[in-house]
Image (cartoon, rainbow, N blue to C red; front, side, top):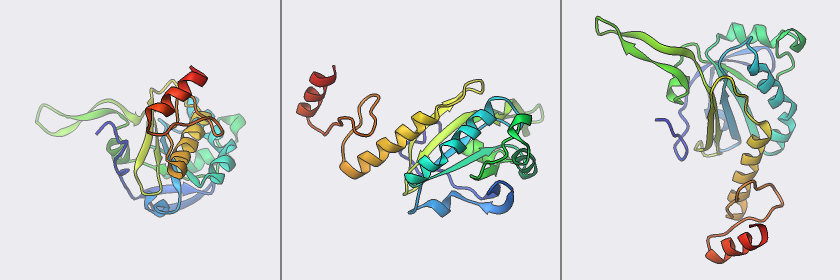
Length: 212
C-alpha cells in the first residue's frame, strides 16, 4: 500500500494528547473531513534528536498553516504518557513544551502499518506464528497532505536521520489550494504569485519561453 496519493487516508481511532497536555480517547482524522486540510506526520520516537526540531518547527509555522485551513497532527509509536511527559519538558532539556497541535499515540503500531511507514514488518517464527518483528518497530518520517474530502494528495517519507522541510510542506498546501481554486497546474518550484499552467500545449510553451 506504499503510495497513498489519490486514495482515502486510512482512518483510525487512538489515544492522543491535545492542547499541550490534555488526554483524549478515540482521536480520529474524521473530525476534519469537510472542514480542514490535514498534515498528518509520523516521527520515530519521543525524547530523541531530530524529532523535536521538526515538531517545534511545525509549531513556529502553525499560524501559517491555520490561515490555510490546515490542521497539523503528529504521530509516533509512543504511549500517550510519553507524549504528555515530552510536552511538559522544556526545549532546553530536549522537550517540546509549547506544542499545541495533537500528538497521536500509535502504541499498537497499526496506524504506522496502515500508512506503510513502519520501519520493518512482522514475520513468522519457527512455529509459524506471526510474532517476530524484523526491523525497527518505529515509524519513518512520513508526511501526508490530506484534502478536505479525506484523500491523500501528497506524501513524502524520509529515513530517520533526515528532517523534513516545513517550508516545502507549506508550498505543497499552497499548490493544492491553488489547483482547487483555479484549476491550474503548479510547475517546478512554484510559489503563490508565480505563473501556473493550464491543460494546453500553448500554456506550457509560453511558460518555458519565459522561464526556461
